[in-house]
Amino acid sequence: MSRPPALFVSHGSPMFAIEPGLAGPELARLGRTLDPITAIVVVSPHWQTRGVRVTGAASLDTIHDFGGFPAALYELRYPAHGAPQLADAVVGLLARHGFDAAADLTRGLDHGAWVPLRYLRPQADVPVLQVSLPHDLDAAGALRLGRALAPLREQGVLVIGSGSLTHNLYEFRQRIDDPEYAQAFVDWIADAVARGDVEALVDYRERAPHAARAHPTQEHFLPLLVALGASDATDRRRRIEGGMTHAVLSMDAFAFGVAEEAA
Image (cartoon, rainbow, N blue to C red; front, side, top):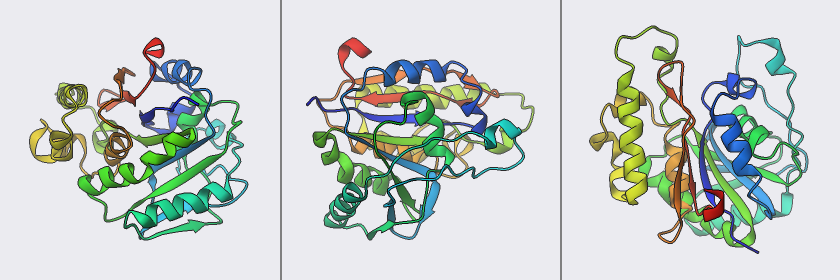
């Protein structure tokens, strides 16, 4: 079995579920190249916990964890099945890497998980697990979380960090005069990813231009470091350009270990 890549995807606003823009077709195209995979593990910033939690139910509800959006969004479902045995194995793997890990038998999939999966795997035909972000996680910890999940790829598991490459929601709702700052941040990150500069990416808060403005809080950036941690130096790195929505929300994604013919 070929090893699936590790992915970082930007899920942006919940509207991405019904407004695919540039990113939706690109993720769909990538998704069609990912077989065979045995399961999907997704880390999303919309589930933050004390320690790390893993969905352990056999059937996962679609959580509509947002308000004030069109009614059509609340009618969407992603009918994913869980994998309780794999969840137990993931909990054990995380515990061996020093994380306080446990299964959660009631949690479903939040929009950070199911929205991009609607493009990547619309048929919902492989088991899905969601892994939480510890609320006190920092950039180095996110990289360590990804490294703990990395062995799953050898078992045919697709590891996804789902966040947003930029995530200033105040400016998303405003008209601003200098939206180009967001692209400058995105281009710096893309260059660091292309060079494999892990140290710079972990220290992005100090090194990247406009980092605190692009991410007033870190939780939507950390899934990139999870995906990076789940990769290794042999993985081919690919930027998937998704464009900039609402002037300042980047929808770019990164694939680590994608086959050359899929690039």
